[in-house]
Length: 136
Image 1 (tube, one colour):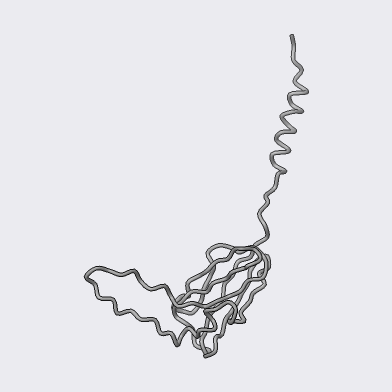
Image 2: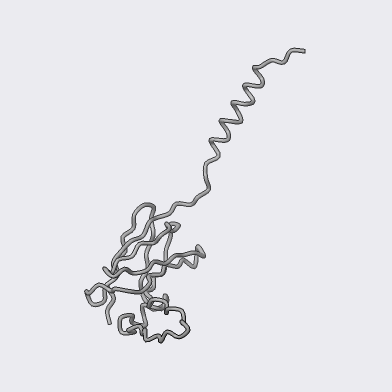
């Protein structure tokens, strides 16, 4: 019994064609960078946090000594509440005295609360620059 190669080639071609056309269901996303200042002076520590209640997701980035931040992962496009938080406290160390205190004056309370900060960002596809100039 001789099998025709035509149906086999047609089948194989269809499988290859369809496997390449599946696409991805990855939602559009944007990169976020910016600079954080307090009364015009670069903030040299802390964390910028983004959260979307509608999307149920968000991200955060540490503020560098130059006052800049960059989210390590893109965020899905949409509206985000933004907060600026003090850096996390270092873990306790046995036998090593910890004398690290965060200057709360650098982080006014209203910028730590997403309901009071009045900081929002509509993230769009591509690059998003969001500079924050906090006031005391």
